Image (cartoon, rainbow, N blue to C red; front, side):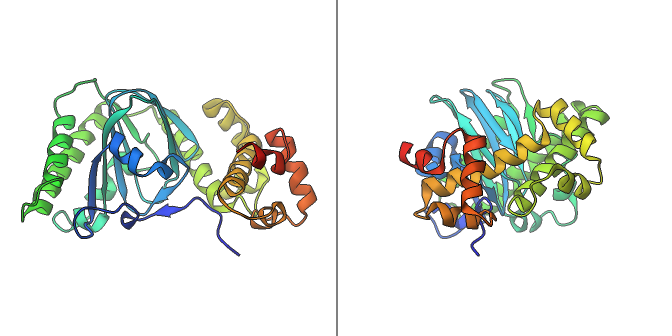
Length: 287
């Protein structure tokens, strides 16, 4: 049966002017225009940095939504599911890189020790708009990326290392309170498990057991951090995938039900109507 989890995009999904390189740098507005599918929930098999210089919006990473504003710098590790909503005037930089690209010069555990790539810390820094440390480095990386210098990879690797080291200083200064950090970590772990198991597991108890929590504790955690119940988040994830399949595939409603693990198509229709407000066919006709 076809896997219906969010797509996992590789660097090869983003064609480059030169032969395949283990890194990619582009202006955010250009990237979104060239690859509009990145607005939908997806994951990557590489590391990602997103820096906002203008505009507003939201960025959802493993269920948790964060504000986008000038000066916000996001860090994503491979496998994290995310999507964003950007204002029309949003500008900034995106940087992708394979782990091997960084480890070629900086071997060891340093890449994995950065706090912003750990689920125990928030994946975003809110820097002052117009700060003069990290934004100029990203601008230099973009300029270097567009050139044809023979040592381009070495220069970009050096800039990347400096960018990550400078960012780690801010995390040391702005470390979250332990309780907040633990709550965020558990919510992100719940999001990762939900993206993995939503076809087979639809009860709060299922996920609470995987997280070694009680169902009541998981519900209370979700209410406190996200202002939603755990069950509502489970239903939202199933409906989101159903809407994606109804919008972007030619599968029948019965086939969509089967892809999502529903044994009975009529039950899927009732489930969709209950949580989406209309039938699958009505949703498809509105697209």
